[in-house]
Length: 190
Image (cartoon, rainbow, N blue to C red; front, side, top):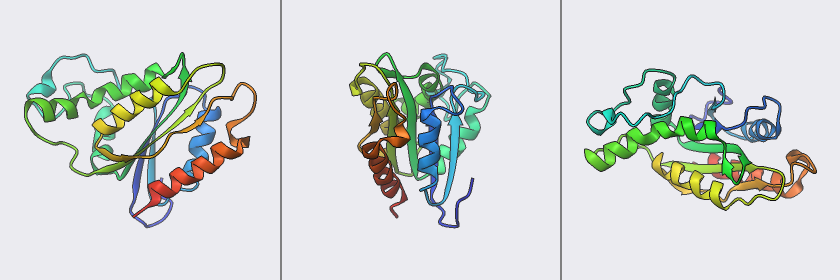
């Protein structure tokens, strides 16, 4: 979607299966504040298979699996910002978002084996992590940071976290919403 004519592009990976859940509401609140264009990839419903370690990308600058990844890859190569938004299940981002993002293996293989850089444009990165219960954010923050760096995020904003969604809505948490405003300002920076 295009919000205005600024030219900024943001790619958001949504790890939630719930179409009207807390993660989606946080994504909606973020995109309402973003300048430019954004694309949301819903990991649970997109047509992207997991990496199968066929090693095609060890010798080629693309993935051998032909599916929805090619459209994501094209957008990722030109975008300015990348955000991972996910519920936290058992102290980790969701399996479907990990599955989709396993396809960034193509960038790692290009850099490691062919000494090529497929993602030339530096990006800003962010993460939105939500959960209830007694989990911690350490593992999902670390995993998300590794993934964002592999997508050429040179600057990664402090995670926006709300780990009390079993007691109240993230949108009603003042600290979470203040952090969401800060990440939007960070992503809108020229």
